[in-house]
Image: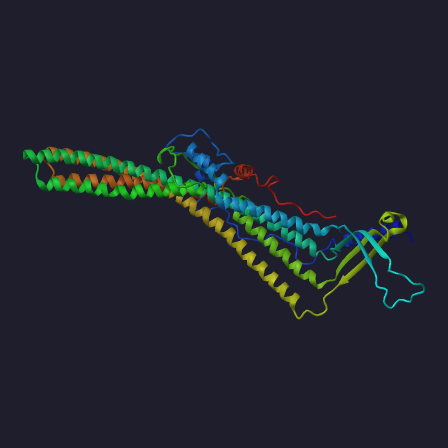
Length: 506
């Protein structure tokens, strides 16, 4: 039988084995059923449509899908988020993990194909003449040279789908890493936005405190003059001095908090401590309300839900990997090469060598080792299932909480604004009554203290309202697609398609 005929039969048998590998042991993945609410409990008609509320009127009826933080309409915030997506260390680590899992997938997928190698060698030596029958006197045993060159090949036949389950698990692991990278990118953008909102709120509170302090100092100078000329008493001066002291004591904690917040922002952007540029004030930020969306859309958008499902797919495939060990493992081997005692004739016809072979292994008695791996894989699948269900349930909880916060904080800001307006009127009237002798200064003091506290509370309410919008964005998964691609380009780490690679089979 000629060598070419053997090779043809070998490849036909390999192709037949590949067709048999169409079935795979273990359960096929099916998305588990989850309890999906018909609607969010706190959804309102206004929250089901995109609109801009607020302080600054926006002409955009819809938010940019690729950069949700631009809905706050602050270019400085946009630059800070871009810096965070380009330089954040956690995000760089997540990007590297995607590359790592992609490499592991390629390694696992390579088992589908024959593995071809090459080997060559040459040896020269002399044998011993001891014990040989000497016909004629020979001074020495002649030297000999052996040269070989081979192309060995091997192929692990995936007869029962064990390798395909490994590829399925590796592919899902890569997809989970991609989802995790998106989750980290969403988290970085969210943390940067939250830190910036808090920074602008602290800035506004510091401005109010300094303005109030300057007003108190002006009043104190007036009453010190009145005391000098006998139209005021020491009690009044002491009361005003206490106002000055209180306002002065409020400044250092605010300055400290602002510095810490600036450092936090720069840390998120992968930079050393320092100053942070400012954009719009807390009351000038646009506060758009994105649509609540449908539960099915939520499952497709939130990266943590996507990550949990891919981890479930990987765990499900591992059951098949473990069960495949019960079945025979068949491998085909072959080699084609040449050998000669003379290097010159190494490539001549008589020097050709070839070999083909097949081997099969199957466990007979493992003392429960394989059964233990199957049990462990099934338990791992149940753990991943519980985590997936938890992620889905948490997503509905987060959205509902954010919708409640969005609605109620808007009411809180309105109430605080009305309170500040009322207290301004109260402070002005009490000051007029004092000047005309109809009220003592304690009334003025109480009115001014109440106004100062209400102004600080209004700023805090505005921060909470902005944070509620941010929380709603985060709960809905944000709009991170294009921003994520920008991150990849900036880091020059991943240039392939964003989706998980599909297994290739021969």
